[in-house]
Figure 1 (cartoon, helix red, strand yellow):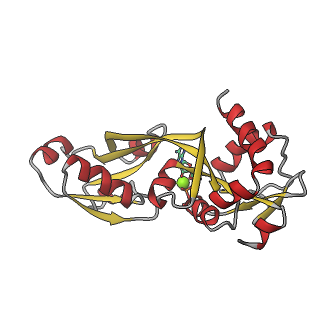
Figure 2 (spheres, helix red, strand yellow; figure 1 turned 45 degrees about the vertical axis):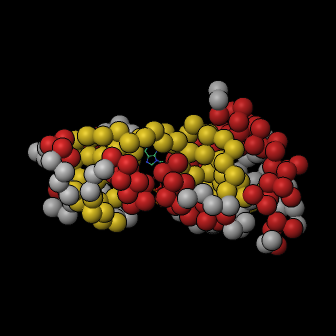
Figure 3 (tube, protein in one colour; figure 1 turned 30 degrees about the vertical axis):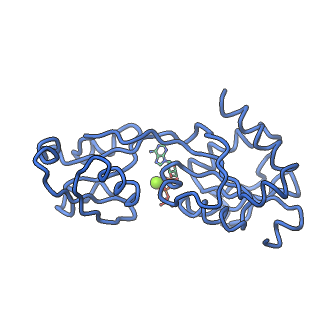
Length: 220
Ligand code: ATP
Ligand code: MG
């Protein structure tokens, strides 16, 4: 048990950008206002109108780790991030229906993906989501060499690093700008509330009303 869990303080882990922006209305629905702006402040711990609730700003892919270890009681993370993390130690009560996009396979406009798959070719796939991609292609019986990247996946097929990429797509304009074609829709992605399992037991009285307010606001 970390000190924060004992003293009655609640800590919410969010990432900057779309998750922070899209979680704000849900917090408002729970009567919570964040009193500092992470885009203009360099602070990583933000206060709220509730002296017993603070928000920490971490990398999107680190949210499950902070919550799993109890350094944050709860957090908001994309399904993409949760699938890669594996979700150990996390209770996932609700889909918040925010930061929606899809995870897809994309290739260079000239690459015949369907034929390559049909012929049983070994595909080189570049992605940040190696675990999810590994499972996806294994289930389809497609042999892949996975190349782990941390960003700008769209570049990989253009310079011959890979035949395909697995990436998140929303409007498709980034793919289009780089002459890539979406050839397979793997899954729909949205962000989930994740709660530390011990915190849920020990701080249920404080957490449950916030979870309930998020649930009501996210289905509107
Ligand atoms: P970092 O910038 O730290 O590498 P990131 O790029 O994953 O992290 P964001 O771009 O803020 O951070 O994405 C956070 C989450 O939002 C992702 O995990 C995903 O669930 C979702 N997301 C990512 N891209 C889009 C998009 N184009 N449209 C909607 N939701 C998206
Ligand atoms: Mg991003």
